[in-house]
View 1: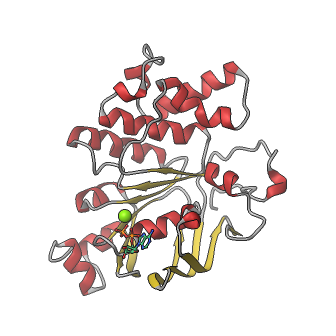
View 2 (view 1 turned 180 degrees about the vertical axis):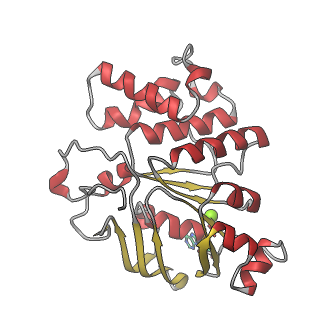
View 3 (view 1 turned 135 degrees about the horizontal axis):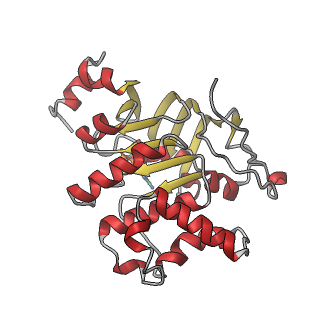
Length: 272
Ligand SMILES: Nc1ncnc2c1ncn2[C@@H]1O[C@H](COP(=O)(O)OP(=O)(O)O)[C@@H](O)[C@H]1O
Ligand SMILES: [Mg+2]
């Protein structure tokens, strides 16, 4: 049985205090995306199982970020963006009119390539989303901040300096802080768009390890240019090319015995 709970994404569920402790299932059905006349995603079907790590790979411009950003409706405000098809999370379509997009973005957290902490203290960065939600209970905020920093494997390094500016942290620490900030509001899905490509190898290793642990509680999708990273950390790999999903399978299969020549050429470094 899949470990999912119902997400309440509709507007009348604003006050629902339920928090999800497990990852969610994502389903894309014949999804097409255009930026004005340019077709960036050409009809993709995909099912992502809860509590798995899925890597999106493929050459620059093939549509990985566009497809990833569909899952928390981050493309909505891009000029000229248009989409067709369905995206469902735990069976509910997320592009229906009555979906509460703010609630959706709380359930589906996102971490970007460049760490982007706010120019505030370490504590305030992690507490930010909780305060936005109207949580005022100081003890609860303290607990959630500590928990998120522990989950992001940053607590031991910062616990004595929570008032220090987040901008004084190293790049790798800043990225773990951004992960903590996302986790503090208790999402069920984590979207990561090349989260380590701006980091040194040691910071990268730390983040990979932490992603591995987070799988128990979250469904994780990670866009990566690093083939070793995809093969080290993911359960499933999706190879995109020119807006199409060429191959999607268990990571071991993709990296040892892909079905398609294009996949093989890409993972062996013959193009891209
Ligand atoms: N905001 C945008 N406006 C117009 N075209 C875009 C926009 N974002 C991405 N594209 C185009 O869509 C295609 C897919 O881009 P993207 O999803 O960023 O690819 P990837 O993440 O795989 O590098 C590219 O051809 C890119 O130029
Ligand atoms: Mg991208």
